Length: 226
Ligand SMILES: Nc1ncnc2c1ncn2[C@@H]1O[C@H](COP(=O)(O)OP(=O)(O)O)[C@@H](O)[C@H]1O
Ligand SMILES: [Mg+2]
Image 1: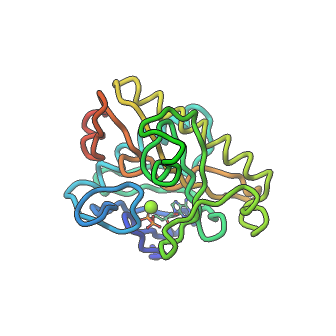
Image 2: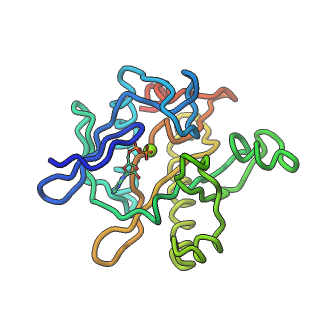
C-alpha cells in the first residue's frame, strides 16, 4: 500500500490493484476549536469522528449506487475507518461543488446585500476552487472553460449530477425530519472514458443539516440519522 496524500480529514493510499484507500481520521475542519464545514483548517479532533463520517458516507454512496448514479465507491470497512474507491483525476487541482437549499454560510456572507438568512434556494449550484491560500474562491462556468479546468459540456454534467445527488441526500434526511440547507461535493474523471463521478465523502462534515430550525453537529447527525 502506497501513501499518496495527506488531507485534512483523510489520508489516501494506493492499493496493489490500483484502487485507492481513503483512511478517515478523527480530525474535523473548523476554526479555533469550533466546527465549520466550510473551513480550510483542521479545527479540532473528535474521538470517533472518522468512523462516524464513514458510516454516513457508506450509507449515502450505497443509496446512490442503487439509483444508478455514478460514484467512485467500491466498499467500506467501518471498523478500520477505511473506504476503497476507484481512483479519479480531479478537475484542475481540485474543485468543490456546492448545492444550496437555504441561504447560509459563505452564500450569505457574499450576497447578504440581496439575500436574507435562511431564504430558500432551489438547489442552487456553485463551484469553488480548492485553494487554501486564496480561501477557495468561487469560479464561474466561463472561467472554468477559459482556464481549461472544465469544458462547458462537462460543466453541464457536473451541475446535473450535483442537483441529482443533493436532492437524494435531501430526501433521505427528510425521512428523519432533518432539513438539508447546503452540501459540498467533489467530483472527478475516472476510467478510460473519463466519466464524471462523485468522489470523496458525504458526511456531516460536508453539509449543514437542521432539525426544528436547530443546526445539527456532524456526529449528532450520524446518531440522529442512522
Ligand atoms: N476517488 C478519488 N480519486 C482521487 N482522489 C480522491 C478520490 N476521492 C477523494 N479524493 C481526494 O482525496 C483527498 C481526501 O482527503 P481530505 O482530507 O478530504 O483532503 P482535503 O484536505 O484536500 O479536503 C481529497 O483531496 C480528495 O479530493
Ligand atoms: Mg476534504
